[in-house]
Length: 533
Ligand code: G4P
Image 1 (cartoon, protein in one colour):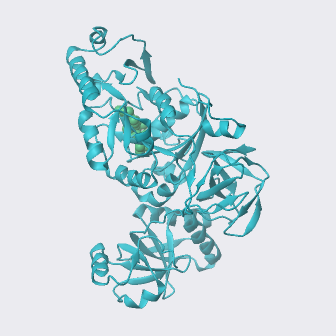
Image 2 (cartoon, rainbow, N blue to C red):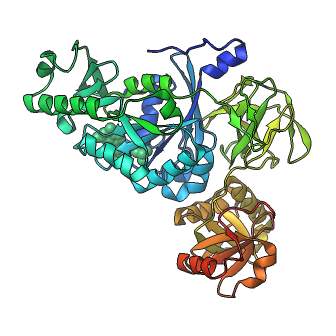
Image 3 (cartoon, helix red, strand yellow):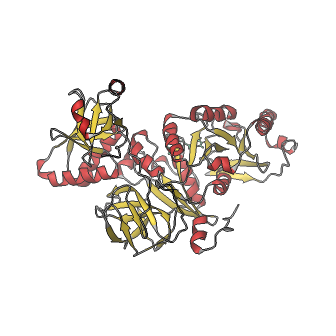
């Protein structure tokens, strides 16, 4: 495999930056994200498993799944960063939940990634959640690498899959691997760049790579590897791909114009390590950050900068604390250093930085751009906070997403009001739900999906001992407005205030909202908090 290129790295800091890869896997639920994550960790030696022999129940406890409710339900609700070493690289895998209800938290996590692996189920192609996540990556301009998974099951035609990516997502799809058959006739992959056949055999607990020497598509040795029909279809496909499709260039990839496509099967391990090796040559090292003042923040500058992209309460029941996750953007982090937090106008001593691996935590002494570290946070930090040792950089603000479901929140045990207030504040800061105050004094929570409500109610009771009731409200969308415009909305819509006191109007339907915007063009409505407020 390729090792890290340190050609341009002169200082120890530059060397550390050049070997870091910080990425997320985006996928629709069930496409195989947990399975692929597990396999990547396995290659990194981060977990020891005898292939895919564990029962489903056990597998659900993949290290990033640590909340009781997640384990009970077998879905990944919370996100964590998994860090591991492979081939001289340091990988930071941001674990984004695939469930569509967890969009805000997932979106925020993508703000910390430098590139994304878009994992598709080869029998399903591009699915709704993939589209949403893809758009966020695209808006951020991060490069996207596609892995067509489950090729060991009857899959769609590979050309059809490429076409679907191009048409649905609007990005040119350029294969770097081509599948050797599919379904029960899936034998491996052909590396279109190196012109090499990689053949696998299924063995208990995964796959074994079979050494083959095939000099090119014409080599008769290919016919020995598979039946006549599979060989014919494969040759025709691979030839067509080489003549018809655009060539891959790293510049177009890094500019987000094309996505390189790999084929494989995470569960049987066909092509996964090969993919990982190639991924590491493609994925960018932590880049410069574009600042809102038009300048760039060089990751190799001496001054330390980082931003908080996620807060998580009660990660570990034994600790019952809150953790702020930071993404380092420049400079070296050292335990015990003091940094400035511009929002608080305060110097903070970072005594207890930790790295997480699911529920396990380890104190870290140093970290570099691209790394994710957790700070035990006694309510100090907010999502979007900047920590810096030099002049505060003008980072672009982290996006907010307008919720689409709303419910009135009622405490059911009035003796627990202190816990109730603490719970709603902490869970709102984490982004589990958004909290609004009605002008009539009611508390309203907003989310992107019903499951978020359930998680909120469950955690309020389970973690804060503050039981509550949710009364669903007949609103379907929300928009921020300027406070001076609040009188211009009818009683048909509800006006609430967000946690910063900014006005938000809740509309009964999308139609009503669009209609309002059309008939009142002089009253602006915003899908993110307006700057002037
Ligand atoms: P997710 O995190 O994206 O939701 O997907 P997950 O990895 O949990 O995978 C969903 C299902 O797809 C699992 O099956 C998993 O074994 C299967 N899967 C993942 N990758 C592949 C692949 O390359 N080929 C095939 N054939 N299946 C794959 P399950 O039946 O839900 O669980 P289990 O009983 O297999 O553990």
